[in-house]
Length: 186
Ligand code: OFO
Image (tube, rainbow, N blue to C red; front, side, top):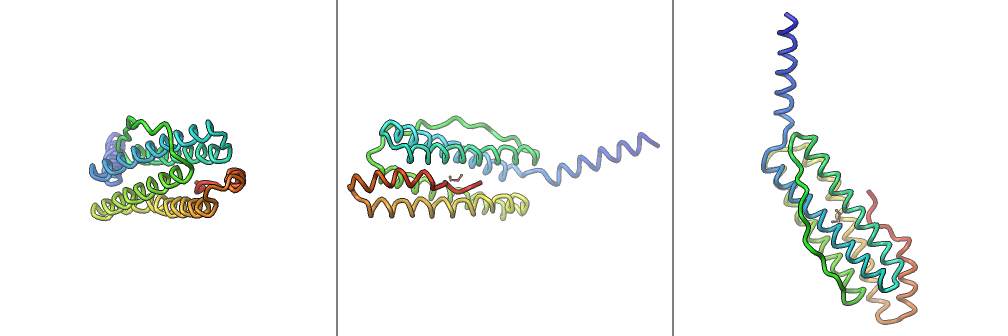
């Protein structure tokens, strides 16, 4: 009789796992997203390093923080995929640029990258809906909200840079002020 109960519990656990498991489509989409977050982290790290070599302390610390946050976004996805019975794949990374033309180009690159990531996140959300995976759909809403904040911040900074133009004093103050601007919080 005890053996029957144990078998029944094991069977129920197995069924529960099957029900909560990610579909292959959703798992693949999340793994792709892991790659995007990892590449964003790498890209912003290159920007941080470039800014540091130019003596732009505020800008470099902004990008170091941003790079760390993207890595956290990647880790959050890795843990989620594994918790849902999938296998999170750690991707190889594309080599980011070494040098950037100027500050405006750096922040334009940031905005373009975030817009691309938002597009990719929307694709994941779409796949979740098509696969009726409402749990992952719900999980991804955090990323959707995060992207709105990140894009808005990049646009806000670009507007400031346009106002400053080539004014050296303005750039000095900008570098100081950006120390207090946080990339979207986690
Ligand atoms: Fe991961 O938030 Fe930007 O890309």
